[in-house]
View 1 (spheres, rainbow, N blue to C red):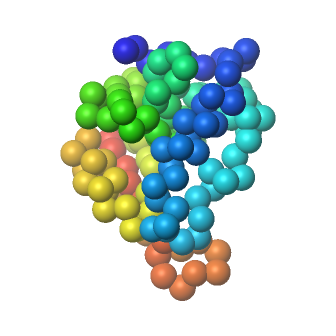
View 2: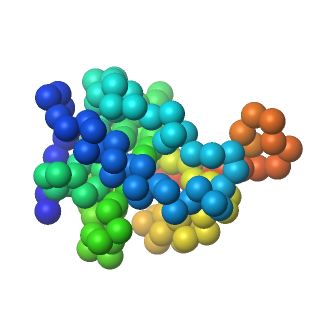
Length: 153
């Protein structure tokens, strides 16, 4: 399956359902709760306008949000449907992000994942990302997120 850029008109509701379904597993493991609870269809549509939203499948079975930053392309809401995992869809979306970063003359891909999600740390390391920092959400006295980066050649 080939990634494509989601643009209006698009089924933002299907994309929101994918994100909520595939982020649900982390809820009992992370604190504070995921920002996906506040995410709406309108937010996704706005992200597609201010940045980029890439998807695989119709209806979508994988997605990623890309946000432009001064020196990097930020990767957010990377999600792959449970029955589609192990097929290289996340890697395909990361490859799209790398290509977009090169086209935009940005030197890095950057993302954050929660401290508790060790399997995500390992998956991103396999894709060439390395830890560059830890941050705490407001009200927490310990790190809750890890920032990862990958150089884009």
